[in-house]
Structures are given as structure tokens and as C-alpha cells.
Image (cartoon, rainbow, N blue to C red; front, top):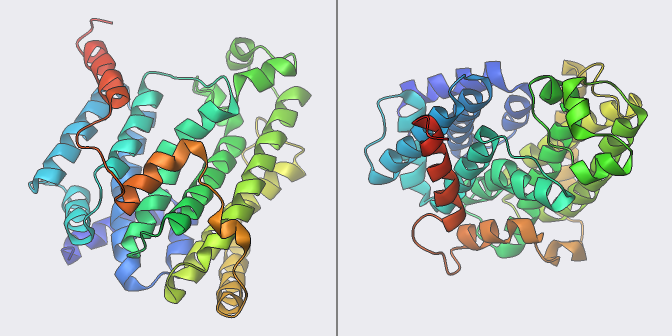
Length: 334
């Protein structure tokens, strides 16, 4: 499906750019691992262009154009684009899933901030839960319950990322914590961004976000048994590894401003071993009732798209609006 030379490029991009994903992916069967690495390489390169580049608007608009080319079957002449195009064709990937990611990147480019937890979840749905739904498609799983639990895992992992990166994001002028939560702790978001400091109130907000992540990890675990048996260890491993990042933030009492939480190689290896055992138990363990819980409202559109239930044609009005805003910004009109 994917040219071996393009696949080698994608593997190298992930090996050096995302240690946690690379570790978990080692437990996936090759038929899923290779397209997953191609997907992640495409997403990671796009994310880096928006986060680290000086022309954020241009980076998002370039991604829009790259996606257009992929879905026309004429991808840009780059390994990640060619590999991703092969995945889109081979798995009949609904366009709404990568375009949700595009919308999340666009929100980053315009510097959007989030007043409430629901707003943070809206953002997390786009930049992470969309990847969870896409992973299900790569496993040939389109059951709505399984998709909803995969989205739960994506949400939980993104909330963990936000909790881990509070200081790093603030120093770059980014804010992903719910601003209403900060104000309830008498923390002015603008003052915190101007002078990031490990205030106790910021720590409490960070820990509260991790509590929400834990709720979602628990819901997500119920869905792993709905996946092909060979895929389960890799998905369990992803949840365990990211859960360890959250535990590291907790040990610092929610202070991810002073230092960024990390997990070592030993922890990752332990998670890989534990995930194999969990996968074995999942073949005989009764399925939890929470498997059938209603999808979080912020990810319902992803579940419908991946399950191919009444998918609308064309880009959403919200995505078109933010892209128009970026086009104006790119032309220097805004």
C-alpha cells in the first residue's frame, strides 16, 4: 500500500519526534502499524509547522492545500504526503477526520483560548480524538461504541498533554487551561502568560484537568476489547504510557511550570509488558457496560463520520470561517 521508501521516512520521523507514540506502536500488527505511522508522521509534521514556524497562518493554509491534493489522489511530492494518500485510499478514510485536525491547527494559528472545559474538549476532539477515530478506521473498526471509546482515549491523552505542557505553552504565549477555572483560583490568565509561575492555583487547575483525563481513560479502556485482538496491546500501551505522564505531574503537585514531566525508557518498557498482559485478560474478561456510554458531545461528529452515518459533504461552516480568517491574516488584511 505504501512505498517502502516513504514508509522508512515516516518511521524515522516518528522515532525522533514522538517517543511515546513510537513505543506504543511497536505492539501493533504491521498491517496497522505502518499506516498508523504514516498518519502520525503527516500529522506531526503539520503540527510542528504550526507550532514552531513563524508563519502559522501560511502553515495551516498549506496543510489545507495538501489535504486537497491527497483527496484528489495527487499528493504533494513528499514522503509523508504520498504515504498518507495511500492510507486514505486503502482505508476509505472519511475526509471529515483529517479536516477536524486541520480545524484544530487553525484554532492554534489564530491563538484561540478556551473559557470552559467544554471548549478545551472541543479543541482536544480536533487535535487528538480525531486521531483516535482514525486509528479505529485503520483497524477496520467502525462500530459507534468502539469509536466513542477511542475518542475518549484521544481526549484523555490530549488533556494529559495540556497538563504536562502548561509552562512550556505559557512561555510560547499559548493557553489551553480553562480560563474560567483559573479565574476561580484568582489567577488572571493574561498575567500568568506574561509571567508564568508555579502558582498553587495553577497547580490545582492542572490537577483538576488530570481528574477529567482519568475519567476518560477509564471509559476508553472499556472499548479496547472491541478492537482486533492483535491491536489491543498497542492501544493499552498508549493509555498506560500517557497515564504515567499524568502521574508524574501529580507527583509534582500539579507543577508543570517549573519543569516538564517526563517518563523514562524503563517506564515505557514496563508499560509495554503490562499491556500484553491486559490484552490477554481482555479476551476472557466480560465487557464493561460503559462500553455503550453515549459519546462525549464534543466528539459526536467524529463518531458519525468514522461510522459513515449521515456524513455531510464539504467543509463545515466553522472550518470555512476560520480558514477565511487565516487567509485574510496571511494577506496582511487582519
